[in-house]
Amino acid sequence: MFIIRFHGGLGNQMFQYAFYQYVENYITKDLKADLTWFDRNKKEHQGYELEKVFGIRMPVASYEEVARVHEYYPRYYPLAGLRYLARNNAARKNRGRDTTASHIFDFGEKQYVFNNIYESLDLSKDWYIEGVFCSDAYLRKCESKVKSSFNFITKLEGMNLSASEAMKDCESVAIHVRRGDYVGNVFDILDLSYYQNAVEEMKKRVKKPVFYIFSDDMDYVREKFTFIEDGIPVHNVGQASYMDMKLISCCKHAIIANSTFSYWGALLGETPASIIIAPKRYKADEQVALARGNWIKM
Image: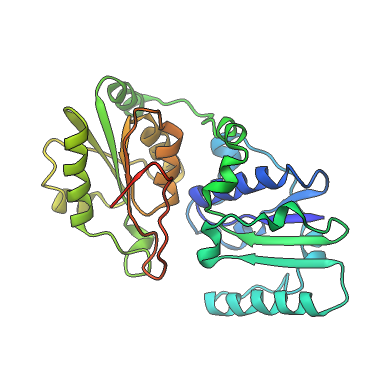
């Protein structure tokens, strides 16, 4: 059995699903998703969203199946440091014991780099894989299939519909400003200068751009983003927050945050004429960008 752990917000889930689709080229049976993280983290983000947003369904591993291939499970620690130690201890024990189960812990800067180990795994063993898999290389292996899976099933209505129609009739530029859970940690790396420089660059490249500002902190945007004249604020909240991703994909161009959410919004709306600007770093403690090769990094 080959089990992939899903966790995090919608953007991360989408990267994990792209990896799932990539692995499906090599693992033709007993490939399942572990969704138990969402049972234990009900207040994180909006829960498991791939089915609600895109109608995606995968074979799901039961608690018993996860326990069979994951030594530290079902013990779960509330503190991140203890979870980290537990995962690494599980990986060490799995390597050292006589078992058919193996554990791959694919986080850190490794998550942005293509790892072809998954193309030659010993299929006589059980495997439990956890990571974020933000490498563009996995997506490129099955890009058309993945993109066709990410088809929003809920139609736009009301103000969202009006906004999407207006975006089609102008040189619309989505700007994503992520605050919330980013403030005060390793993701809190974008200051106003990034957005100011990106806006100026966009004005050089796009004639009469119209800026649509997406954020989970509109008070911050209203206070700090006075350098954008006539910027149009957009924010769907709670269980409807994924609509912001759909609307970002309706824009012709994008200035994204260091966020998988706006990465996917920009990617799903990208055309050959699109100009997409992304931060040159994803996190303070890593030197890697979350951006495609043809995007402008600032």
